[in-house]
Image (tube, rainbow over all chains, first blue to last red; front, side, top):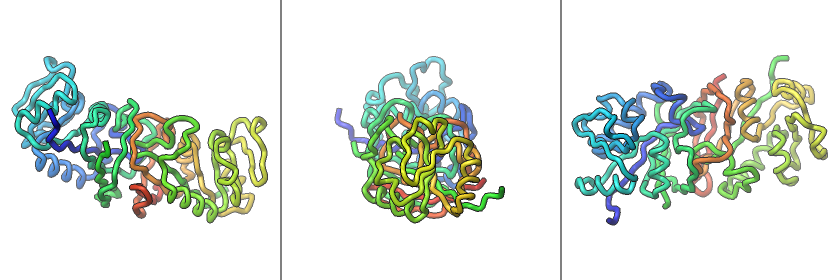
Length: 173
Length: 173
């Protein structure tokens, strides 16, 4: 099936590429403005894709108003919720399923392994990344830990709250 | 001794925080403009600090016109060159030595362990970082791999050649 759905990655990372200092990090190093932008952007897009850990950590209010697709190897172990689809398969199969559901856009919201597998599968069209003014040295890698060769085109850069950068890239697949 | 020398970190990294895809990476993913800026900036500052691997990899023409301080645990094994000081000790001791040499500014130019140890030692005043429009997933971590808690203030952001961002941060120690 040809891909005719727009896939956007949305990410908050430290300057050195970490999306969390440790598992279950509450991300208090991200600004209020970034959280508001995340909400507005994902509600506007209407649907999100996330992995198991992100699904288990994300509060219910951050799922509401959006269709949620969880890409997971263990759907039978996860809680079911309204508007949540637990999906076992490849990124390509999940995108095909979302197209069959009639959607034309979806946001990939993490974690690192999910971002990595969608990039490696050449399924991502653009990236909206907030770069927080912190460096951790260690933590959870936003782009995962498998080798990538992702090339990007800079679309725009803006300042966001609390010394953050908000950068929009197009993915050159 | 009170620190009265300005220490600037200069770095080229991928969006996901790597300064090299592998050891001896030729960094051909960085733009010509970034190389020109690196040269202009380090010549203007007049002195650079680097680690053993960076010293062994950097071509001679990229050292010329600058005093070079190599922070190394094995000075006896390294080639000596004009204007190059091979120094064994802590980052603090090296900064004290450079002040004694009469300098008022110096640039830290890598690699990852050197950047990390100068940040961890709270010796860095500001960071000039070029973010290339690439993601590697794996590679040499620019900020090293020891835990940091570095907080930054965004001073400016500009576009550089080939879809790069050039960001100036002040380090809030």
